[in-house]
Amino acid sequence: MPPPSASTRAPGIWDVIVVGAGPAGATAARVATENGCETLLLERAAIPRYKTCGGGLIGASLAALPPGLPLNIYDTARQFTFSLNGRRQRTLTSGSPTISMVYRSELDAALTEAATAAGTEVRDSIALTTLEQQGGTVTVRTNRGDTLRARAVIGADGSASRVARYVGVECAQVDLALEAEVPVDERTADRWRGRLLMEWGPLPGSFGWVFPKGDVCTAGVVAARGNPAALRAYKDDFLKRHGLLGPRPFHDTGHLTRCRRPGSPLARGRVLVAGDAAALVDHWSREGISYALCSGNLAGHAAVRLVTAADEAEADSTADDYGRQVDDVLGVEMRASGTLMNLFARNPGLVHTALTRLPPAWHRLDAYVSGRTSVAGIMTTPLARTAAALATRLPLGPARTPSDSPLGS
Image (cartoon, rainbow, N blue to C red; front, top):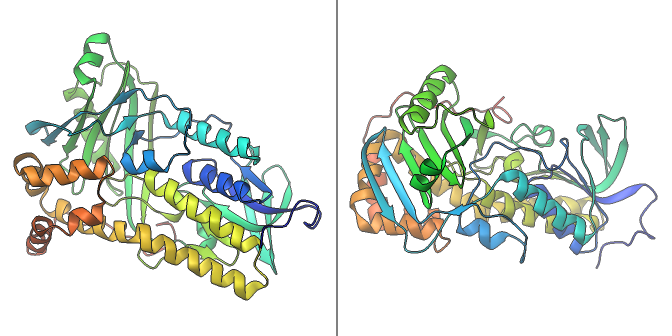
């Protein structure tokens, strides 16, 4: 049964309202529109808007983009430099070009334009303030005083999501990332061209990165939330050691990354969450774009089914199905990445040695970033299983602080 056309919809009621025009929201809106839904996409900032993000697209992200999406690729990583807090540095070459470097502002704008081209109505500079459900309708109110109604709502409004609080998303891991986009001279640009850096840092579960983008390097550090002074000190030291502290950055920002607790809700009635709003992020690498694109696609299709649900029992079943689909695809990945994160937090030196000295470990990571395998695929290898078993016998550094409350707040 196709979604109702505009002529059969109740006046003033959208089929689908999507909140947030990042990769998850723009994808969900496009998918819903392409499947016949009258869709409204709301974004609180003006598009294009800056988003703190490394901007590296791994193979799974590239495969999930709409065919022919116009996108500027500023560099492609062919070499990976790994170090252990500035020591034991080693550079390895990928079997094929892997991570494509983009700016999130441009990626999000391109995905939003794809949704617009499909027929989605986009309204930016407008923020959701409240939402409520009654029967088969969800009512959304905005900071402009608008009252909007829809048969389905998708929350893709980032890690500080209002929709996620409504749904009751819970997090197992909350981290703070600090990042700068630093202009570099021609000599420095040549030194980084085609090569990215991953450095395992001094704080439990922390790392720093440098992603080259021509005359700019995106660099940052991430660690468990709770010790911002130590993380800022690590960031300054990291940037200084790599010659990136002096130039005035174009952007110098921070944000929280949140990883979903297994079993955390992904829907409440006719309201779904996707991407960062659903806390769908890799525990170890904190990579979230591929998760956003995948969950946005699943949420868009689920919203289409919500629009055509005969009654609220069918709507509830559809929402449950969405949660199971996300768990079957992304939950498996997150559980595997959680195991890897546990190993890394207990002994980053072991992970560093494995990646830089054992070719099978590097080849599996290379296969993951290029899209030929998954984190779950990596963690089922004999080497990974043995390392994970050994990690359970190792003492853990200063405790990470999981959060039992919705959104880690």
